[in-house]
Image (cartoon, rainbow, N blue to C red; front, side, top):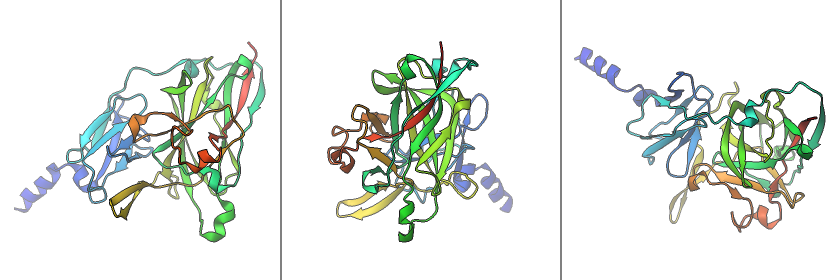
Length: 319
């Protein structure tokens, strides 16, 4: 009887007990870092750098399906009762474009800057959640060959509120790039991952050096986006925590996405610029311009603070 029980345990899926799953490239068998895990109900989470994510049934008892996706791979969907311990994603046709494959230029260049705008007003700051992504368009400097050397990311770490209970944090962000599709963020561009953490000690403008990534801006421009992945543990690893709160209301339990620090200051200093946002687990991942058509009740929009003041340092090459 003991032997039969032991064999039964061995044959049952590993995920039934560990409730951990790993996303791999079906061809190379390597981890797909920070894959998107959508619960199919407007909420979701991310796998870690090693492609591993948690899905304890007790925590997500009301979820019946998962959809796993990553840039450069075909999306896969599973019933929560039938999730394999190893999820293999099939690569799609290459999405590389001239932005990434341009050969590194070795000639002289001049350093130019598009200014960033920041402030400490929490009332005109965006509360980032894992379901939100914010994108800004960058164009070539005076039409010349332009490499993005640094992204200048305005943040509000709320340092002046520490006495009111705001403690330490470390939030993991991801930078992604998108083609300019008639003024909207279009096809995602495959590139070496750009993932980093920001904590409470960061300056008001976080300078992210991406010179080694060789990101050259095409003639039509390029969108750079900032996306929250979640909090980091003391080793810098993504914490697999529930990304929404369940709040009882008269109409039933309402799911509210968890907001992460630092806040992102929005500004009214760029009247001609357009910032685009999307909720990646809702509305078919559709990008929307951040104005009254997105949410006419938004206090940010009412105040005129409709743009994220992301800046950049450029290397401008002579043709």
